[in-house]
Amino acid sequence: MAVSINEAHKFIRSILKKNKGGFASPADIDMYLNRAVSDWISAVVFKYKKTKKFDYDHLLTKRTTFTVAVGGGIVTLPTDYLEGLTIYLTVSGNLIEGTLYNWDEFLEVTNSKIITPTTSYPAATIFLDSANAAKIQFAPVPTSGTYEYTLVYVKKPDVAKYTFTSTNGNIVFDATQSFIDLDISDRFLGDIYARTLMYLGVTLDNPLLIQTEQIKDANQKNDER
Image 1 (spheres, rainbow, N blue to C red):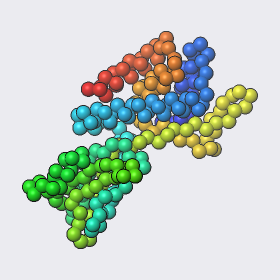
Image 2 (tube, one colour):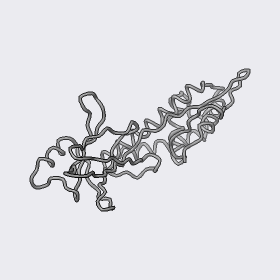
Image 3 (cartoon, rainbow, N blue to C red):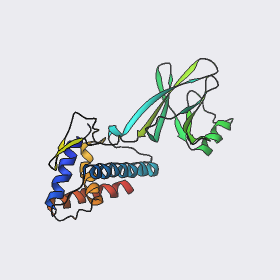
Image 4 (cartoon, rainbow, N blue to C red):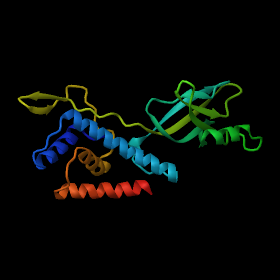
């Protein structure tokens, strides 16, 4: 489940008030919360690239299906694409897992007479075209009819947005406006809050923040392994 942006703001503001009456505008809190989520997911992706293992929350993963026709094979990636995990080709109702290669490896396998991609061993690569548009290329492509490919990927998080009204300096959450919750599981909130407060310049001078910072440090060390 996503995390309530209202609850996130209330927590951040409460910590700021306990630290010498500190204050940050809703826009600043949004900015640093989103930066914290982005930085955390970047660390997750970095770890995946090193280990090829992805064991994080399902909210970060998404799948999309592409229909590839004769002479096709190259399609535009979703706008929320961040990092590819794997691909599947649907054959007779069954999902056959393939391999996501880098560009050089993809050229090598598609030009090989020994390990050419087939419906039993599909392949794909992700690249930028001449207009800097993110594309994915699948192999094989059908000689007749269509193939259905599925891409599983890490998605970019939604950009959280707090909506509010202000009366006599009092900020009150306004759920009637188009707010956006934090696109992350509450299992990772200790890390996200610690990063956000650090960006806001809060010193760790109370037990709650010290504990939160310890969680962040432990998670960061795990991310870098």
